[in-house]
Image 1 (cartoon, rainbow, N blue to C red):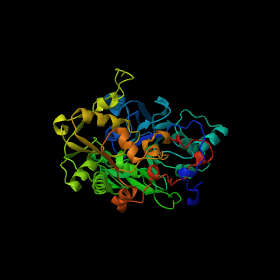
Image 2: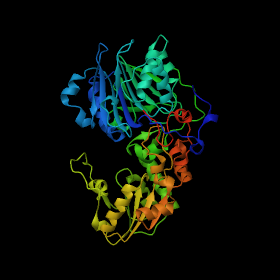
Image 3: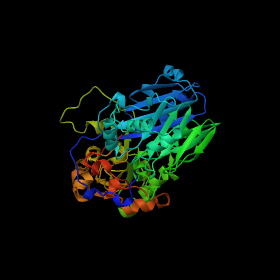
Image 4: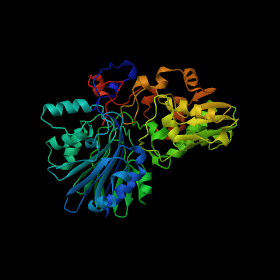
Length: 487
């Protein structure tokens, strides 16, 4: 079902429908095999991947008899699991997942890993990414009698594996993967064996690590660091690996895409700065974005600071290139969670005030450059500028270390509908007026891609509208371009 690149869609020429989409997700994946107390390692790994999803967390552990036990729930990793939970999750194999979805609500049944009783043994699956033909596959499977318990597109993969007519686990997984379009980085356990797979374009990162005689696969290298595992290599686009005890076997690869298309927004915002993905240091990539931003949009100012924390590296790069001193002008409260206090309708700055506060001694009477990694809706930025004015800032120059976000993502990054994207409906001058700053500057698309050219080419669809994988459900009227489908 892999379609030629001639069918690659462009956002400007796709007809949209008004059907409700499946929920789309951002996720973190972790799996370990061949290591005692695997669930404890999975807990630590998920803890370091918490930035990839804060809605739910789950771990499935497999004991020496091949029996799977799962614990998952709504909330942060530290809230979902207790010490007693981890003690009960015995075994040398574990698969974990953290999830954040944008539509469909916080439904416990959508928490992963999905665990099922399978003819070849208990099966657990963790998925990061969005399938762009999920609704088409789901409709077909329902017509054939499949019963779905979730609204997650990951469950489609489970049904495809279970319904494959091939004889071996490897062949059934291979058969299932060949039906998928879009983005997927997968960790699948069958008994004590783990399978890792990445779509043929490599949209989402997945890395292979080693700890002692066992192996780990995870979304980012920061999850290897926390368990003192050694980075081995990235799982390549289209690659399928079998991890069994102390052995790693490369299985048949998926049909190749015209070219790899890792998501550049991972480097802009989503990945942790202490990670390396696709051979690139996330921190150094963001510093390069900041340096190029300073060259493209200089400013006469007294200090530079970031909207913490994801823009810290880019702001350092801007300061290095411009020679303007770097300061800690905004502080972020890292302990903001759910609160029973409901803001009044008039207090539209409540959310931003809970998270950010300016340092008056840095800001008062000064011309400041504020660097952010990206601008999506613009609501938080408007509040931040108001706070800086109240703290006495004389001038505010806003700089964005990425191009305007103009299109929704179909491949696994949280983007609102196009009508909600401020970069889609407003010019740069209009955005500057909207958020109330003296000057506004975005990093150019060419400048961004040039900064990381040694690690590309990349998917830049959210900036350019050039979607590198077929949007099957959209093209067939099963989903809307304005509200992307997802896992």
